[in-house]
Image (cartoon, rainbow over all chains, first blue to last red):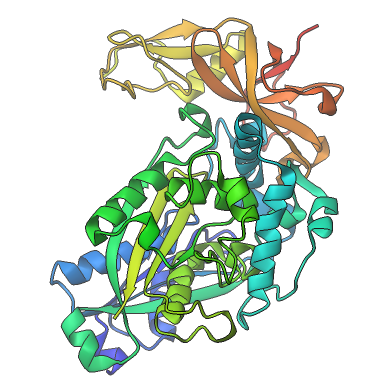
Length: 348
Length: 135
């Protein structure tokens, strides 16, 4: 394959131009990746930007319009001080009601955490166990941002960001990029031996403002997106061997278990404690280290999750390889869950 | 298109706050109440809506204590924000003012209040609603 000739389009996720004073990112990516004159378009759905970009690529291929496209995402966040990053991230929340009331992204997920703790008795220790697990996985990923194990005690004693969420409940402020090449199954067989099939895709939205939702203990858009992807792929939660879920905050991973049908509503805290979702368990979640340890360059996250599944399903995940992984699922949220994108992949 | 005067906009919502009025928009067809105000009912899609004033008491549904704040709120941290449910069956996000952050509890009664127009010219020039512990 000659990238400059054969890749006809690129869909690039990026959340905000405010970090680096740089918008119009898609032609930059196409230019630097040597794809000119391929059509390049930026896709923005907050932290689900590249999950949404992937769907654009899938639709471009499935419609027959293009044979080969690139999808990916990018974010460069670390040149800004934390309060400024917090402000820029908060711009993906409602301005006149959420931002004006001093709401932040950790704050919105903390509102869900408080609700989950109140309704189901989920504990701060259970939240912390998500962080401990994902850091343990991240140590095994040479591309993870923070390759360091942390203890339950460290998480519990870390400084509060938005109570009940503490520093180690939060994903990292990270620079990063990720990309995938998509094509038709027939052409893929000619081009490479290391390939996976995308067998299900789903996207759904919910009310933009958190307070307008019926429940704060579940992300309805994620449930809908998962249902769509499960139906398309003819898969069920029990068929999934490995998953990358959007652990922007530890509570988000607990809610993701429930929304994806891995466990019953309210049981997410106990589910992480059971060890099921750790490497060695029957459904390892966030083997990459997740947003928590691998890092969360927001625009790059959606396709970075798919990259981890690609490694797992092609047997290239080295020290963190899930044995015989055949079916993988990725769950990517935008904002406080106003956007959710779910993909299901199968080894080919 | 809505003929409502003043129009059901967020700007008018905050203008009502200058009169110490917390206003929702009610769908005249299905009676659904909405904050923020909007021109089309989010339940039944009717565009016949009217302003409806909310009372001054609410109940705390969920909350957080923000320690790491956005740049413009840094001076206030730590502060509490939450979601408040009004007896009229509508919810809204709000800053929760209390002298004791550790005394906040889900389900507790809260009272509506308004803060004056902010001094900082870079910030939106409307006063804000907020909720506080009942006296």
